[in-house]
Length: 444
Ligand SMILES: [Zn+2]
Image 1 (tube, helix red, strand yellow):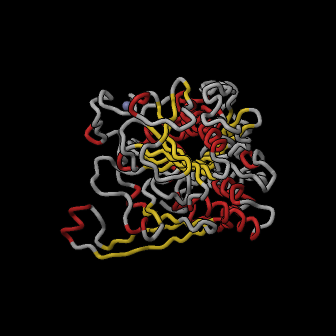
Image 2 (cartoon, helix red, strand yellow; image 1 turned 90 degrees about the horizontal axis):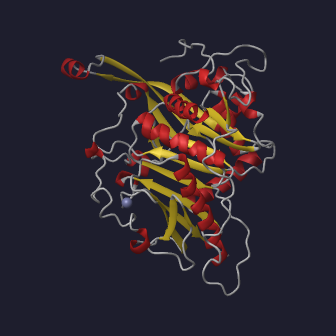
Image 3 (cartoon, protein in one colour; image 1 turned 45 degrees about the vertical axis):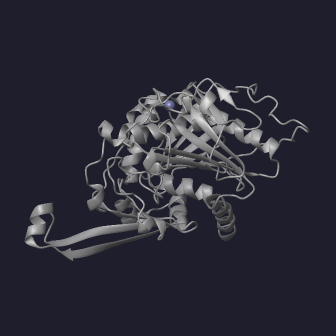
């Protein structure tokens, strides 16, 4: 660990020729060190220079201290720990949102849980033969205005609603919740986008969309089959209300910045941001410094139908599932843009639910390019791609792992439920490496 073990590292070789721009030089022309862990970030945050570092210090507060205990001989032998035990504990707090994560490298050094045996995630439907969602035509409800359907995904109406006036369902057409291609994910998000549009036509007073994807029972899912939920309500969920409020307060407190710009800048400053783009469309991928739960990825994109956003979200989810052995996750999407449409008077069913234009093909990776940040206090290659307007309100997807499916212990304890903080099990620097692996496959 530690602040004295910095090593220079060049850009990933697979990025050659694929970069929007690349540089390992700081704005001052000095080749800078690269950070490798949240501990290095916490210990060196005051010495980082540049606009990205300023954003890092503006948005995040860091503490680093030693927590000590005395360990008896038997306990020391049993767990191989030092008798005079000292552990470096770091906390990272988002000053705007107060989100907070605590890291202890002793915990992060624990072996990662790679793909565990099938007992971890049990399919109670006999491989889909008893699955309601595989039989969605007859065993799921539909909205009063019908369904949105694409080749790989379809919407339904939630049969046991907690949201009103509109609470929908989005289903993959295939059964396995952890196996989905970019094309399948593209359809999943596209029918969701069209569901929000259709629901807003029928319920013009409901202006607050929220996209929910619980995968696996530990994440809150009640069905094995891959599915999400779609809420369109008159009230925003608290996370959306807080984000809107905090982004306004942050912009007022720091004129010329926005919470979204600062998030990208702060993560770029330490090497935890990637930008995926095609044409003018962009999506930023951040391995979150202050995760709500383990392995949080924050994505800032343009819309649910953006091929760039789909590719970025797919790479992030595959990084968790394929790269880090995650079998259960939450994916929530805030700031979903809602199209302004006039309701069609007297029409009960959405008039052309299944005739909406397919728009851009979502399975096309042609022209996708990427920029990355090396972690040098600032990184103009990523930063100059940012929209200049402080009114930028990107779609914000948040993905978290929900722990080990084999563990009967919940990953939500008092620290999370009451304290609203979390334990950072996986270092975001490991997470970004696995995301890079997926981006390499994407850009091959
Ligand atoms: Zn199924």
